Length: 196
Image (tube, rainbow, N blue to C red; front, side):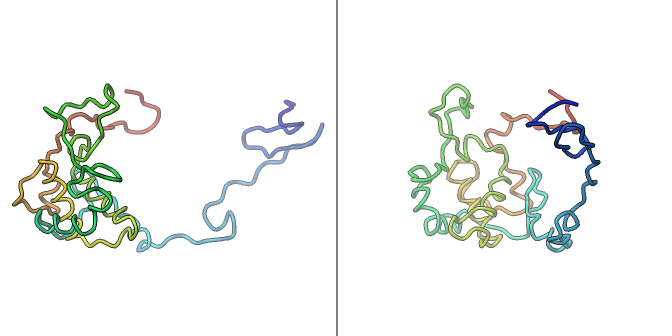
């Protein structure tokens, strides 16, 4: 037998046997959830649905509601400016606003260029998803859909992507074409070990 870890032989599907001449014992088959450890329970469909809040690039998962640039600007000033600056470029935390001239994409060549919503994000729907999950920092998950759509509208407008009269909702948001959208390659692998 191979000696590994101070006399412990480890083979796939076998438990570790210690000592010369010891007979390995077959490991117990894996059990799922609470049976394996004697704790917990299987989540209900309602509990899973409550956590299933991701928004896809095509807008799948966006809730009903809508938001305007004007309302978003007022909400931004009240709730976001202290962390991201009055115009989204001052910080002290992430810079949210900025475009690169000609919508170039120099990130691999120029590490000094800061990635922002306006120059790096490929899908506008990601903005809704991110705000919904993470903002405001001190009270994550407490914003209502109309507020989030309004924040999204304001940030897209601040980045020069939509006009000040546009309204964001589940129909209009997926239609917003982000400047960096064509800079990313969609992962269309079907699973397994495919390599592009």
